[in-house]
Amino acid sequence: MDILRVVDQLASAPQDSINSSHRNTNSSSRLLNILQIVTKNVPLEENQTLNFFGEAFGLCVQTIMVDPDTIIVPDYSKITNSIIGNSNMGSPLADIVLPGSAIPNSSALRISAALHTDDTLFQQRNTTDIFSSSTSVSSFVASLSIIKNRQEISDLEDPVQITLGIMSQVESPRCTFWDFLSDDGFGAWNTSGCNVTNSTNDNIVCECDHLTNFAILLDISPEQNDTSPPIPLPPQFLTAVSYIGTIISIFCLIITILTYLADKKLRQGVHRQLLINLSIALTGLYVTFIISTFSMAIWQWCIIISALMQYFFLATFFWMTADAINLYRKLVQVFKPDIKNFVGITMATCWVVPA
Image (spheres, rainbow, N blue to C red):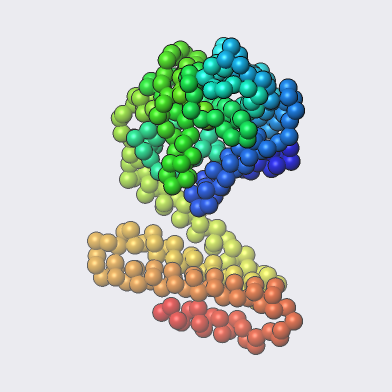
């Protein structure tokens, strides 16, 4: 049970982290393989059941005697109610019915039923004819495994019937299964051997000739009825926003400079003197930026203002670097002696070198 809790915690990680890990190390397929190994090898007596209900998935494993007249119906409602609570949908979120006659030489079998709340562990790396950017998994991912002598039974003599509740009403639903061998072992959605036999507003009924992880894929592009292009923002609005933001920044920087210059105590200390010079450089940068928008008509002014803006731009980076060096000396090189006339050297460097 501990390994199942670990897999559940990993499957509940942020989607971006799981996608990145899967693309680099195929982590999702490895987690799914762990679930298969657990269901095959966990010790169970006849008619004994193993239940696990986590946040990302629920699992039910039991050993039963099966003959050709047996109808195998895993209790997915128990899993559903345990991991998400009672559903308000009028039909079950997942249901799989398998006749005993579908399994050759029926005998004592291990039935493993799992239900994943989303497709977190079923992320496809590349687009295909089946799965593209306009395709969405619109159901829980339900799986059913029949294990005999620790070997999964894949080919069935009679099809298995899968009923999956859909979460959105979109045209062209497709019954799919997760093909572990596709995309060089990274896995992909596949429709081979699965067909839609019935569909309602609440669920889709499929028949498949094999057992694995099943889900409903829906093409979400028909929902995009509004094909009109987005209304672009007028250039005057963007220009006004830039002017307002820059003017506010200049105003705040001037207040900062005047505050430090008005009180001699505030000007004491290397860090504060660096801050004053950085504020002056930023003020010069913002002022030349505003002036540059009005000097483009006269090329002589345009050259001068562009040169000044480039100068203040470089000076700003020099002063930020000087402040970073000062912080490094204060926090890391604590016991080393101070550099003599550090502020004077810095001012000569940061105001002269950019020119």
